[in-house]
Length: 476
Image 1 (cartoon, rainbow, N blue to C red):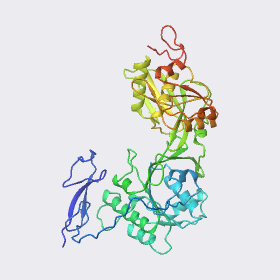
Image 2 (image 1 turned 180 degrees about the horizontal axis):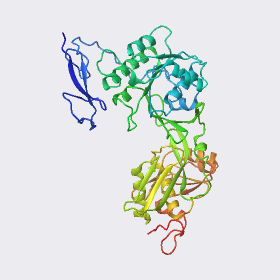
Image 3 (image 1 turned 60 degrees about the vertical axis):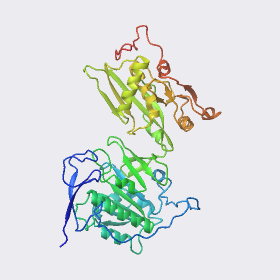
Image 4 (image 1 turned 30 degrees about the horizontal axis):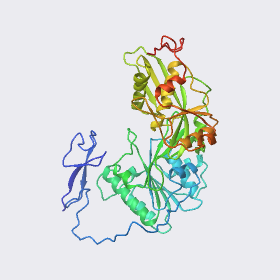
C-alpha cells in the first residue's frame, strides 16, 4: 500500500513546513499551520506527484501581431459593467470578496438574472439550498428570470455539469471556500482545496469560454480568505465594501486585466435589493447642511470617475492625558501626519484636543489628494469658521508644508461645476490647459503652502486665539 505523507501548510500564505509550528515563519501569522495528508509517492512542491516524462516543445510567437479586442457581455447594470471594465469578458475569472451580509450574493443574483435574457447562465451555491435562493429571487422580483440553479459542493460534479452539452456561458460559484476535490484529504476551505478548486474552475473557463465568477470569504482583517495566490490566478478581483450603518455599497476593482483598476461602482441597499447609483457625488452630498464649521468638500478620483464627498472634522477639548484620534473612512496615519504639519508649519495646537474625522456616506478614501480637504476641515473646526462657501478642496500635503499638485484636475473641476460649485482651493497644476477652468466655470484659488490655507479662514486675534465661546482651544 502506498505510504501516505503529511505536510504542514499555512492557511494564510500557503507556505509548506516539515512540522507544525505555532507561528508561520513566512507570513508571521499565528495558529494558521494545519496538517494536510497527500497520497503516496514523492511529492512536488504543491503536493502533486512528480512526472518523469519529458515535456513537449512549445511554440513561440512575436510580440507584434493582430489581436482582436476582447468581446464583452453587457449585463445592463451600468455600475457593475463599469467596474469590470465595460462588461464581462468570455473566458475570464472574476473573484468577488466582501464582508458577510454586505450584498455579494444579492448583486450577483441580479447580474445573472439580467444576463439570463441574452445567454445561458448558472448559479451554483455551496452555502444555500435551492429554496433559499428562490426566496431571495422573489424578494428581488427576479423569480421569473431564466437562471439555472444548483446546490453542490463536489467540484467533480460541478465540472461535469459545466463542461457538458448546453453548458452556460456565465457561471457563479458561491463560494469557492465551500468547494472540495475528493482527491485531496484536506477539509474544504483549506489552502490546498481552495487553490486546487480555483485552478480547475479557471482552466475550464479558459477552455470553454465561460465567464466564471467566484465568491470569496474574507478574514477578520478584510482580506480574501485562502492563499494569496488565488488573487493572482484570477483575471479580476472585486471587493464589496460598505458600512452596515449606511445604505451605500461600493464595488471596487483592485485588479483587472481587461480594464482600469481602482474603479468603483456605487449601489444603494433597498428593500428590493441593490439599486445602482448613477451620480454618486450628488448622493454623498445630498444631506450636506450649508456653511457649517468642520466640513469641507473633497473632489476625489475613484478610478476614472470623479467623486465629490464631504469630509467632516470635530476638534473638541480633551481632559485626557493622551487625546483621542478617531478616524472613519481615511487612513489614521495620514491624519497624524496632517496634524503634525499643521502644528509644526502653521503654529496650530491640537495636542490638548480630541480629533474626530469622518468621511460622510461610508466611502473609504485612500487618495493622497484628500490631505488638503482634511486640513481645511480640521482648521475650520478649530477656528469655528466655515470653509469657503461653494468651494471644493483637494491637494497633497508635503512634510515641509508645501501643497503638491495632483492628477486629473480638470475632471475634478468639471464634476464640481456640474454640481453647482463655483470655487476650488487646489495646488498649481503641472500642465494647465488654457481655458479649461473657465470652461468649467470654476474660480480657482491656488494654495502653494499650507499656511495659505490657514489664512483663508481669516486673521487670528492678537493673542493668537480662535473665536471665543465654543471650544476655547488655544492656537500658538
